[in-house]
Length: 140
Image (cartoon, helix red, strand yellow):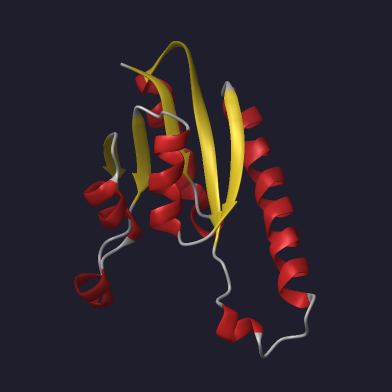
């Protein structure tokens, strides 16, 4: 099976994330680890120019802290051995680069039913599956 599974979880999809965690547990080797990853979307420089200087930084730090607390709680609730990573940037590119950096051997990512916009720009799960250097399992 797998010794290092990366599970990206979006804070607005926690219910689906819990389902994915159970799947990850069932695929994990004994002694393996699960890494819960949350990506806080970066505000682009153009948008930041219209805001109070410190507001975006404060907002990002608050988001990171809340995500860490929530994901740590999920790990405790499900009895998962591993750790939490919070990163800033574009979701798909951060997930792919983190999977390589962490030497993950599987990424399990939740996906929603595609809408019209996804056919034009692609979903995060689609971009992860297309570019990730390790195995990817997309859960619906």
